[in-house]
Length: 459
Length: 141
Image (cartoon, rainbow over all chains, first blue to last red; front, side, top):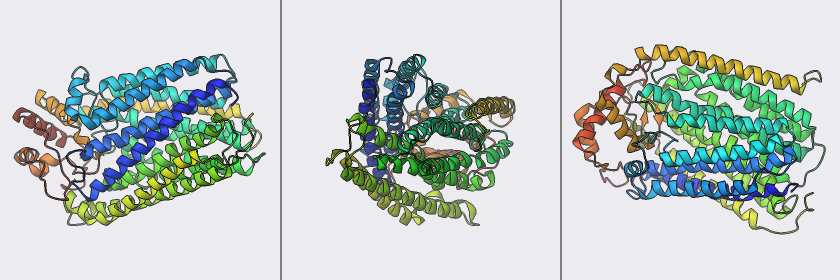
């Protein structure tokens, strides 16, 4: 690696992969609970498993983003990190806080956890994805601020590239919008309205800036295409992201007590949200086709192309599928939503983090790329996980369409649980695809321990 | 992209476009805040409803159920459960959990007091009276 302080990225990446594994294991538990309802009950009720599953996702992606930023910013700004020690300290703070929170979910009843972590002082818990105790939320803010301070100070003393600027805007946005998690009005409509300022403005807003800059960084490295060209693309893509995505928040304001004009604003703007994702796919393929060098890390290139395609399919196509208000009227809060959520998160965020890990980890371990043998294994894991996710999404979509028909659309609607029993076969198939995903993940992890002849040492 | 379209032009469009649409979103939010009081049933936001919302939150009900379509998709929609089942059924149901029926999805027993049960029901009643533009499509949620 070019700058010794980039090494702090390594523990972040390792933690990300570890927590990712935990996320997938809890996903499999929940998948089984969908068909064997009393599986692991009462030890791990579904709501606990789901909290662990989604919170681990958020935390491992944050670890991935932070690792990526610690790796990228020194190289982009051409200077050592302001304080590598602070970065390592924050790693341990975040890891311990994260682990303690997950253990709290698993070992203590949620109401008890709320009572002993200050929820009575400021009620922020018990809302989807923002289940973390107040102390954890404060911890996240502290870690984020120290992290941003460290990177901002690094940037101020070094070269300011567009990629690093976009990354920093995305990361600052992430921290700023998280502050809305502390606002929980008694009025349910207002609660929901501003809850989306965290959730939507993260994943369909500022996170896409982080996604774009990570992808642009890897593409510059593996293709050798001129920085001017890549950064121009990056600006065009993120312009479309925010132009469509900010007002696109309106697609969550159809049925929660908000004015009905949101059905127009939300439908029109969110229908345009696939465009930046499509541009991202075209961008990735275009740059790889115009490559000026043959980078020895084939696996990283594969992840870069993969994240382009899968984010377009998952976020773009599967998002569009149910975003128009007349469609969403029937699909809102069904397995269709779950299908979209799975492929979008995997395609856009899991894959881009795995992409930067794939590129950076060999360099952090003192080589330009892994051995042929290790790369082949990694590419196998790419295909297994990606194809498994396609099937998970297809099976959930099938379940969702049937659910909508049985419970909402037919002339004789049946109750929720009756409909769930009718679609059971698709939950079994989804669980099978989930096992395939886990196998892919285990192969992925194995690929880090496979030696063989390595390529030349990195410059 | 042609050669005349430079990176700095792209950057300026990014900043301009973002600021414009962020301001538009804020304006729409401001307008929504004026319109929401007519729809959000705030007149019935009693201390009991507020306490009920807290019961809802600290027991992580959203971890299995949806409320107005948002939450987890493991258990029934509860935004309209007050209208579907009525107060007494809801209370009896919560108290009789878990059913223990083999292979069936299980809901934990949260050991709620009579007061907490009443507050929760009041919260669900309040939620069911929010104007949700006729969602869900039918009583099954």
